[in-house]
Amino acid sequence: MTRKKFKERYDFECAACGKLQWAAPSMSMIHWGRNQGHGSCIECKTFLHLEITPDMFGKKMKSEVWDDWLEKQDRKCVN
Ligand SMILES: [Zn+2]
Figure 1 (cartoon, rainbow, N blue to C red):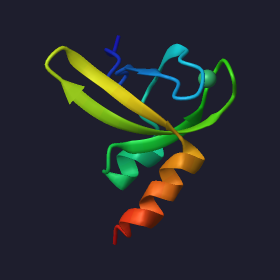
Figure 2 (cartoon, protein in one colour):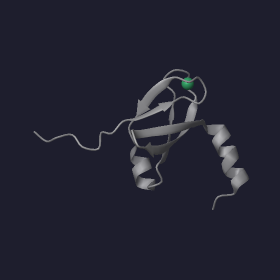
Figure 3 (cartoon, rainbow, N blue to C red):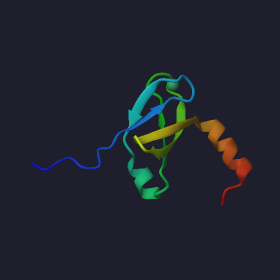
């Protein structure tokens, strides 16, 4: 039997409703190599931007409502 690999879970709280949930890094996140991704809240279905924020206790993700996050990117003019 092969041990499962790369099945890490990242806890995050929905930025819109506060529902605690988790997600596994998507292929696109690995592909981008930017520790960022997106997904929908299991509770309120809000589309969220997710960012992995490792801390000393494990790995977590920070969530932001997609539209809010997009707005910030525009303001910062990143790349
Ligand atoms: Zn939610």
